[in-house]
Image (tube, rainbow, N blue to C red; front, side, top):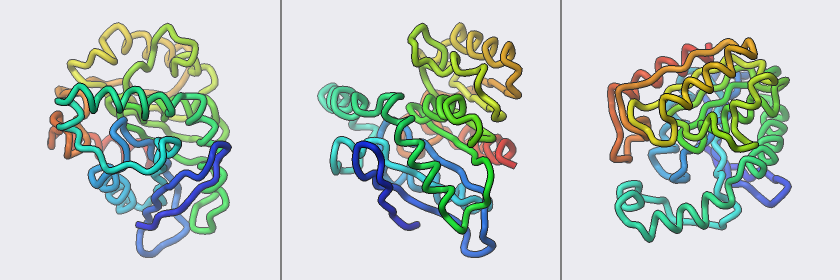
Length: 240
């Protein structure tokens, strides 16, 4: 792993690069972190993904808030004050408009790397990042060829920035995995997303895992080893 600084419209975004030890160039994957920020469990996702033969970029989407200590998901979920700080300080800066502006810089960074294969990249995201992964696929259709969302929320709402509204622009293959019990992605929202992707002719699969929201990251209360392994299998299958 190496840390790089990527210049965006709004400042410098600390980002993390992972890739195999040999065999360059590699296809690139942009990983959108979950809503608890950069921490060891999130870095492990980038590290493991690289072992499958990918050049992985994991940016810190909370960089506008300045440096912060790694968050403990169990404390954030159990402490109302810490959850309030997360929502009012961190989430408020990570708007779809801001992250899509940043994404242009991320894509340009990847395109400039000699160790990255030319052509379209893949994206994956978790929770907040799942929303951003699909949004990116619709915002930069000529640059993204595969997009995954794991326990992403608010994917098909009545808001003007809902990812499902971008379905007619998406050219990537799409994979979405929701949790069996997730207030941020209930069954009616899954159905709305599925219909939007189908009507737009997007090659896709929307599935529901027998797990709780947040099952991929090992440090969350919802972590589920079996479901996390299924995530790896479906993600690698999509990217390949």
